[in-house]
Length: 106
Image (cartoon, rainbow, N blue to C red; front, top):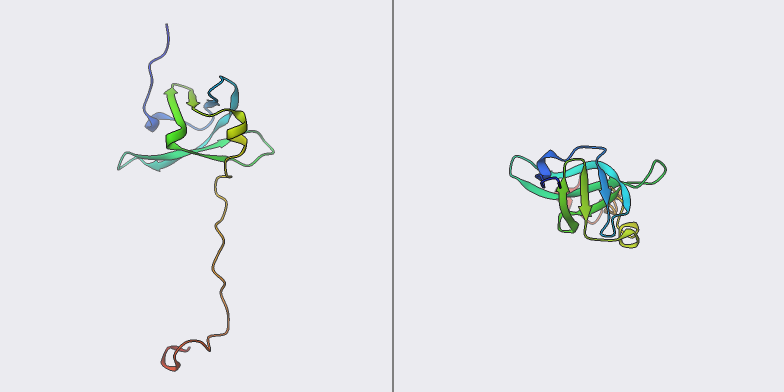
């Protein structure tokens, strides 16, 4: 008897995450989405204690079962995913404001 699939809304931290080949890739660190609007963006998956979480977009999530999330990618693809929470490059902030019009200068 196999378990029935469940909604992304019930995914909890610590659930197993497995790849398309059935290999365990890690565990759920965080669910990314807006439950109020039922918008599922993806998952932050922790591959281990000393590795940063990887961001898995929702479209790469296959099936969700109680305690287990299945992805449609293998371990090599998973390893190449971006880290979750990586900060985007910031704009350069300069103390010099001489390029502003005179009436907008501090």
